[in-house]
Image 1: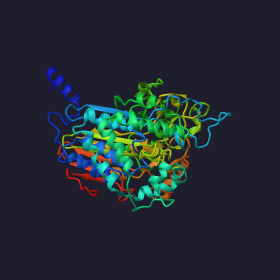
Image 2 (image 1 turned 180 degrees about the vertical axis):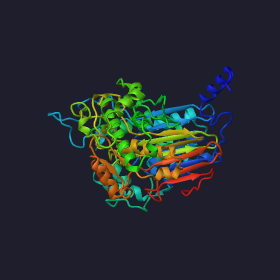
Image 3 (image 1 turned 90 degrees about the horizontal axis):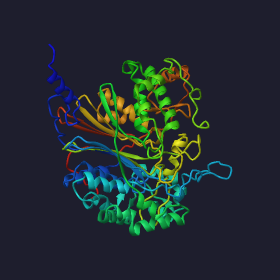
Image 4 (image 1 turned 45 degrees about the vertical axis):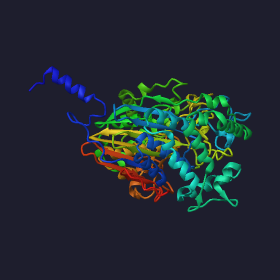
Length: 572
């Protein structure tokens, strides 16, 4: 029986409707309860407290972010930046909030090179010169003013209270300290926070940070000007310049959050809503999935499937190095890079049984420590959804604290290409598109992402430096296979990033015979000494209203996934 034209039009409009319609002809069942997944139990409980006090998911995200900056300073904080992917329940609007750090106005392309043009060792990593202008404080204020329901005094209250009362140092933070303790010890402000009797603090120690509480109180009272103007701004600029940095009051005054349109990619009947530039994640995810769309990879044997996924990773990371940068400074051929025709061209060079060495792909430019970041995901009972990835870049950022402020500064200048083809701390290479320029935002791998389809919507993301993108892709594939939030967070991982030309595997999940099959195809395979990442996932079933939260078990007893409206308040 043929459909009438009017009915065809109606069905077309219904299929094109915003996310509020999970199924044809029916409204989604709202979440029965909230769900929060973060990298630290204190942060999860802070978010739950703000929800219980009348806030929505976006207010809870402010509480979580501020708390992570206190109890997980190795990973993020108000001295850094991040990306927020939002879905507003009232109208289904999806928006990407760019609170990425930006280069100081006095920055120059060659500022990290010596007289011979070589990058000075660790100049982009340690100390005040490595710091870009933070974006997280402006991002939290923007989130509160445009999407939140309660004032900042409510959403920042849990972190302010805990900073004064004290918290128990986690095993994760304690394990990270030795990586940076030598550099942290050079900063008087960092020594005050992270050392006792000349030795780094230990897991189980109770710490307090009244300076951080005062900084948050300024932001709660004065909003953006509490950080980017006035006494705190002057203190930051004076402290950075005294330590050899190039910040100015004008840098802080000029910083602005940017709202951007998310990327949307269709794959296997699902819609991926993900990060646009200056994140490289969304484009890379789209390219990899578009390449894989030419194969029935879900039905393949594990090694066959992995071979094709690795070849897709190789090509996406190669294009990342060549083309991607801050879209406000460089023209990036995004539409072409995400076209199915372009993916078909990349796919044509993949041999089903042999690896293609990265050196045989077109070269980049003139040939072109431990990462850390944090992620959290939240859905509330109204259906508001947020995925946030925030960072200070490397562990404990640049290991420098301006005395009296209570937080470490980032070393995000390392995410620029200090010289064409010279790897950064994550081994990523780049070219002119990501060169240092005044006011420019460095290319990022942070990839907060939504996946919707099959009457489910998920929010996910992870830290992990250059491995973020591949972890998110593997997590998406898990969700598309019907897995739950916790299974997705715990999924075994592998990674390839074009250069170096090696597959890195998490230990213990491929047997020797499978590894040998990969080597027989020409892949170099390295089994890592440890696992990586810290994925946080929330999942909402729009048929039943059931929600799930999954927090990566790789850091046992530190992260926390919770469903419900009442906080544990373990820190009262």
